[in-house]
Amino acid sequence: MRRTSLLLAGALAAAALSTGCVTSTDIESLETRLDEIQRQILQAQRQAPSKEEVSSLEQEVGRQMQLLLKSEADMQVRLQELSSQIEQLQAKLDDTNYRIAQLSQTIATTNQELKAVRTAPPVVVQPGAEPEGGDRRVIVTSDPESLYQAAYNDYLRGNYDLAVREFQEYLANFPDTELADNAVYWIGEASYRQRRFRQAIEQFDAVLNRYPRSDKVPSAALKKGYAHLELGERSQGVVQLQYVVRQFPNTDEANLARQRLRELGVDGGRPR
Image (cartoon, rainbow, N blue to C red; front, side, top):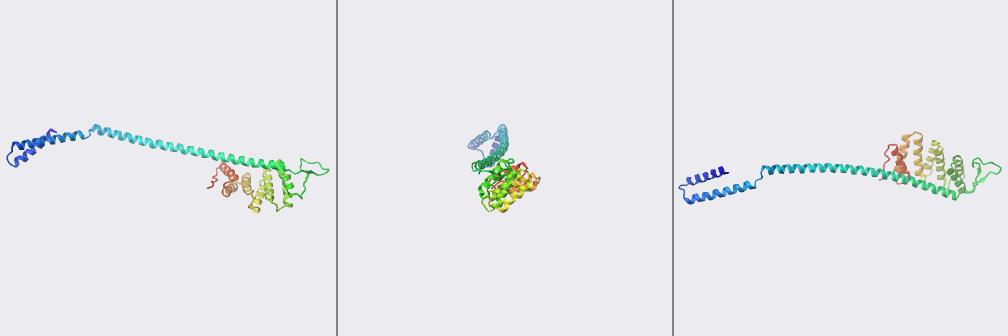
């Protein structure tokens, strides 16, 4: 700094000599200007950051960058954890919905059984004949409701062969009643429970083709898919279950179809 001041003083003196004689006033003016320049230099030096300050600032910037990077990494890990938790909750929700659907179907079946027991018509045994497991019975065919209820009661009791014959008798005598579609469906169910899956498919197809507006259509479509799977016809069974999901998306049958498709490792789709 002193060297700089001397250089400046020399320059000012040279400038003065070049103009002529030098007075005491000129010298004082030069000294004043020199003092001002030195003051400005000292002030600039005080205001300028030191190397230590610059180094410290660089270290602080680096530390803040590391914190930001770590925060970003922590945030990504947290997001992944949240995503995993959401997937687990969704799986639990699907399982709960499936259980609710099963319980709803069980409740519906139980209500049907209770209704059937309460309204079961009297059974007339053939005179002079020994009933064989309750199978040799005479039903008054002039009463369609009694015949239907007798057939349904036999189905509930597991007397599937007798139930099929009674439902067939019902259809032969009362083909145009409101319960005709139900009779065809229960013949299919009885065949399915006897593991006569091909005959069951034929009956479920009959429901789908003859009674397209029946409330038994979703159940018939579902059980047809099950029957194909039981026969080892995987592709046909999968297609049939996917059809149930698409055509009846908000039904218990669709929930059961989705569950079976998941068990098979197939995406059953969801209603939108």
